[in-house]
Structures are given as C-alpha cells and as structure tokens.
Amino acid sequence: MSTEEKSLNFIEQIIEEDLKNGLSSDKLRFRFPPEPNGYLHVGHASAICLNFGLGIDYNAPVNLRFDDTNPSKEEQEYVDAIKRDVEWLGFKWDKECYASDYFQQLYDWAVELIKKGKAYVDNQSSEEMAKQKGTPTQPGTNSPNRDRSIEENLDLFERMKNGEFPNGSYVLRAKISMGANNMLMRDPIMYRIMHAHHHRTGNDWCIYPMYDWAHGESDYLEQISHSFCTLEFLPHRELYDWFLNQIYDENKVRPKQREFARRNLSHTVVSKRKLLQLVEEKHVTGWDDPRMSTISGMRRRGYTPASIRNFANTIGIAKRDNLIDVSLLEFCVREDLNKIAPRVMAVLDPVKLVITNYPEGQEEWLEAENNPEEEVMTFRKVPFSKELYIEREDFQEEAHKKFFRLTLGTEVRLKNAYIIKGESVVKDETGKITEIHVTYDVDSKSGSGTEASQRKVKGTIHWVSTAHAKEAEVRIYDRLFTNESPDKDKEVDFKEFINPNSLKVITGYVEPSLVTAKELDHFQFQRLGYFCVDRDSTAEKLVFNKTVGLRDTWAKISTQ
Image (cartoon, rainbow, N blue to C red):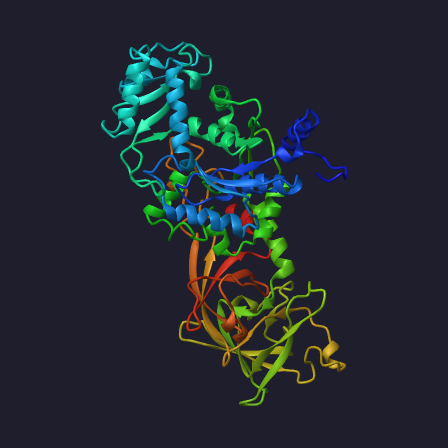
C-alpha cells in the first residue's frame, strides 16, 4: 500500500489491521469467485474492481475462481464471457481456478467428517427437512437419520458418489446443531445428488458440493487471505468458519470472510435469473443487448473500461446497501468519452438544405478538428457541397427570440464551414418542409483568416453533404425500466416496468470518414451525443449505438 496518507475504506482497514497483527504482506491473496451460470453484470464489475484493485494496491496476487458446483445451470459460454469481461475491464488474474478442481479433495474431507461423526447422510424429502429446520425463534428438531452409524453413512455416501441413487433421494448434511440461533448452522446440506453433465468434469461425478461447503474450502486450498462477499453472505460467515475449523492447519493461511454492501443501480435488475428471463423471453436481443446491465451489454453500448472503473471507485465500498442513480454511471461514461471520442458530424432527423448561390457541381474538403480535448490538435477533411442535410429541429420558419438556430431571414454558421442565411422553404402537399433554401457568405469560411470569417453569429449547426453522406442505422437506447427499483416489490412482476421506448431504430446520415470505423470505436456526434460502432456494422451497412447523451436528460423526460 502506498505510504501516502489516504482515507482507507473499512475493507482496507481490515487488511491493514491484519498486517499489523502479524500477517506477512507476501501472504496476501485475493480472489474473484463468479458462478458460471450467466453473464457478469454491473454489480460484479464493482466486486471485480474491489478485489483486483486491492491486488494492485497491495501488490498481491488475485485468483479468478469459477464456483462451478451446479452443472444444471453452468455453461462454458459463461466461463468464456466472464474471462473476457474481466480482461476487458483491464485486470489480470494470477491463477485461473475452478471449484471443480477440488472435487476429489472436498469429497475426501467430507469422508473425514463422517468418520469424526460430524456429517451424516439423510434421505428425507426436502419438505420434511424444511419442517424440521424450525424458525428464527424456535429451534429445529433432529432428523431421524442423524444418528446413523458411521459405517452406514460411509457406505451410503460412497454409493451416492457412484451414482446408485436418483436425484433428490439422499443428501449429506453436516452435524452441527438443530438448536443453533443461526438457522444456517442447523445441519446444513453439504452434498446433493445431481445426474448432470459438468462442463469440465463431464460425467465423473454424480454428487456436487453446496456453495457453503465448497467456497471456504476452496479459499483455503488457494490460500486466499481475505474473502470479500456481499452482505447477504454475512449469516454464512459462521458456517464458513465452522467448515474451516474442521480442516485447518495452523501452519497455513486461514482465509477471513468479510462482507460489504451491494451498490444497487437504479432502473436496472442484476439478478442473473431475471436477466436470463429477459433473454429467454426475447425482451432483449441477448446477454449483450446494450440495454442490459451486463458488462458485455455495457461494452457493446459503448461504455469504456475506464468509465466503469471510475464509477466503481466513485461509489466506493460501504457497510449498508444503497441505491445508486444510474445517471452517476452515465456521468462517468460521458466524462471519459469527452476526453477520447473524436467529434464527427451526423444527422439523425434529416431535412435537405440547398445553398442557392453555391456553384453547381462544386465540392470542397474542409478542415475539421477531431477533439478539442486533445493535447496536440489533429484534424480531418470533411466534404462540403451545394446540398446538405441538417437536423429538422435546427430550423423553424417562425421562431421565438431565444431560438438561435436557422430561421428565415436569420444567419447561422455551418460547423467548420460558412455562414448561411435562411431564404425560403419548399413543402409537400401535407405542409411538411422538404427543402430549406439558403444563401451563403462566400468570405465567411471557418478558419480562413479573413475578416469575414471572424464575423460572429449566435448559432452554429452541424450538417453532412448529401452527395457524400453515408446512410447508417442508428439505435437510440433508453433505460430498460421506467421504475428506479423494478424488482423491489415482490408482489409485482418486474417486467411490468419494462420501458416500451427503450429502443428506437432510425436511419441517419454520417460523414464519410466513418466508413472505416471499427467495432466499438467511439465518436461524439456533434450536438447529439456519444455513439459507438455496433458489431452488426459492415462497410455496406453502418450501425451505431447511442452510448449516452451529452447531458442527463432522463430526469426531465421522466417527469413530463
């Protein structure tokens, strides 16, 4: 840790205290332990930044461990996606581990617990076991199988492993106390029978360890010094420690579980089950739909790794759950893109503008700056001609005094080009404007250095040359849910709050320089927002996703 004075969060304080109490700094090791049963989401991003960030701060290794103990819900696709997401966020793990790496050791330890009289095989139904659990205020009652002989338990457990029994017929339970105040300590299940193909071990196993048994022992086998979990695992800590007590060697590092609060994000859901439901029921196009709270969805939408890391750092680590407004994440995205995204011109709701006094057939290639935030300014060439597209909202026939864009009889500057003056309009039979006719000041070219080029007008609008513009599919995304906590009310289906206007697909026109843009290239469409190239984009059909607006407009929209 840097010697610079800094305010430590409570997680860092725990580590510092352990170091003061004798834990050698070279024994520090952290881990990120996802289940490969879905794609990672924004909540996981915070946990990734926490654990890998601690690894960086303390110069300590961090393991990526897959908690692959439920083959009925796990797939190699999810493993690959998780690795891709962690790498994309900018982190590298020391060891790639799997709970399945330890199946034999976990089984052997379970056998030892049986021999010590600390575990037994139960063949009651799940309903019967649930009744015997008791309540938070009433103790549970012992299973009639709790006092099986050690020999019988060993025989049944081996036969469970050998696949002799059907799913759900037997479980292995730890023998702790059915009167424990913590209900998780009331003879918890350690193993269940699952005849399912595992993505790594195939059909080698018919029994699989439960999370509480596998997790702490995996931490121990990997010599993890600190196991950080979210607050829902606080009641599990007592069981985590009990299991460690059964196998702990004092000559080794004993993992310490500590908990931090979830930082829930408004207008999202982060339950993998609910995210899978959105995918399977076709409410979205897939796990990487840009409206999803998944890391892959945020990446496809155009969020940057730096912006997500900055968001995680900004919200910090807390001891109490809190709802973070999604606008803070969008602010972090906007702040990063402002520094790195080239400025380009695109028109998304086009109306034709004809410069009546511009020479027929003439074209110019004008100089335009790429990003005013650059330390060393760079430029590109954009084509200019007699006919242009401008945004329909940038023109009004009759406008109020505070409308500083184009109107009849007033002047505006075309970005990087000339000053024009509105003269007349052409309308179709419905009264809709189809063309705006203007004249231009030939001596007013931007950057020409002439006296006229310094002439000031109140408005500047963007444009693209119709002869050179490239048609593009533009996907305008909004928040997937209209409610800030769509899954808070358990009596209401969270899908009731799906925003019907979360995706709008339009045809726009972009300057020709974008033809060579590659997937995930970021741009600021001037005056419109930040956009990125979608993976569906080709040279023949350009596709852009709107990443975020130039400012937060949701608060205004949602109250109208």
